[in-house]
Length: 310
Image 1 (tube, rainbow, N blue to C red):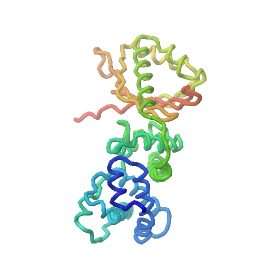
Image 2 (cartoon, rainbow, N blue to C red; image 1 turned 120 degrees about the horizontal axis):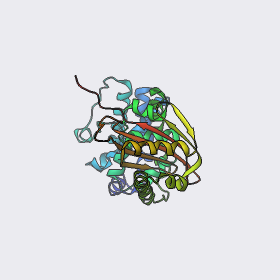
Image 3 (cartoon, rainbow, N blue to C red; image 1 turned 90 degrees about the vertical axis):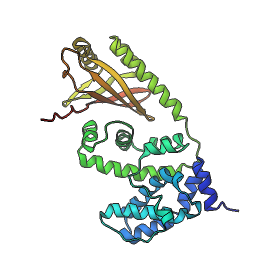
Image 4 (cartoon, rainbow, N blue to C red; image 1 turned 180 degrees about the vertical axis):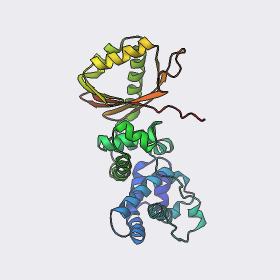
């Protein structure tokens, strides 16, 4: 006998990702019908359904009446469509469903916090192209969250960031549905290993041993990109930059590491010397692209200095 909606909701709320995937698949036709009715048949309607799927993944634990999951999912789609129309859409809705509606955009980071599905979500993220994965990782897992800062960190226009985030949300929802029943790698162990590696690298850097870090983990032909618009190949420029920081008394404090299959992001504070407190920006982000176990391309982004209030 097929599982009821109530059975699937209760299982999903307990962290069963396959039940969550089954629910979204079962009700997809109804969600599409709602989206087509508001936006018309086309990519906008399909994108709204995918965005709604991410919201549902994030908020399934908030659904108080499991038997109302169908109306709840359709209302999330209506909400997503209204956001696209940027105008009011009149809908009559049971108060039980309305009380569970989300008020913010889908956030992959919250999926990791609210579900026992960390490996599943990161498996889906790893399936995105590097360019799409990078904007998602910056937007949702680091302090580089504004469209302009993400654009600067990726060296692309702001419009490209917006379009990539939209495409990434759609493809992420598709990937989550497609992989709900699969076994997934232990990304927790991978993240911990990358974090340890970054911590060891920062200790070595501040002790003047950056050359050993590069020799072990960075390709000898690594391409690096530095503000403002500097490009270099190999280890020499990287070593010179670190030597200059040490000579100037600049400190480095690692604050965050985000790692996917072949993409790492290091966030760190830059500590200016006491005698020159404005020597350097408040912090920086290293975006590192890996292949064959080594960093092949890296881009440094300086966090903007605080705006002075007159």
